[in-house]
Image (cartoon, rainbow, N blue to C red; front, side):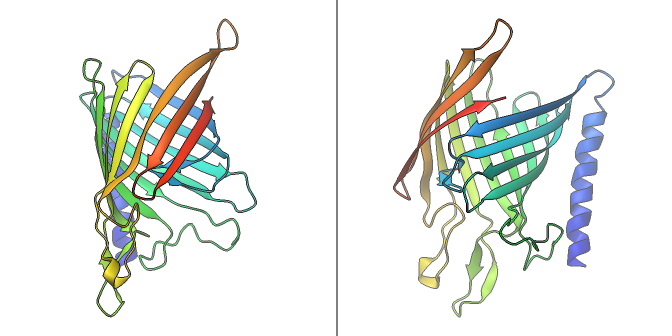
Length: 250
């Protein structure tokens, strides 16, 4: 019954977003967009995944404020860290977005991994709900709040070491854009109990885990085509790490 309830929840969410999106289809053109980023590292919310250059493809369908898509990240070293995500969302009044994401990390070193395992005790999926304020032209400030709601999240433990439940790991980020620069700060909002042996999804204490700046530049290749370049300086004060990341977007 638990498996059925999770799948039913997914169907309800998809149906709701689809209904909202296609309700606007009479007056809004639909768009299918494909992309691919080539990054020197995959650093997400202050954590380096794979310690390797990363190829990051994406595809998205949008109509009105509704969008649905898939995104992945694939390292290029001998110890692969792969990611394949599905997401669905809706943007309200051109500034607020609600997104539901299914994160999944295929284990290429174990060819028997099961993508369709939705047992809460063994699944590799993590379901996240995100609410964001995307800013406006006059106020280029964005605010994001994200929380894991099901799946392979960090765990809460009882005093005897048994699993009590999920931490519902949460993350918040604020960013400000000026010209071609974006300054950002992200915080881990959950507080694992280290005395019980708990560890966090983003960090082991409440605090800043993602702080930095990103600059962008278009490299003109022809009269009609330019190649977007991004360079980021990223620090994780809690983990005492620093990264320089560069990438091209196609």
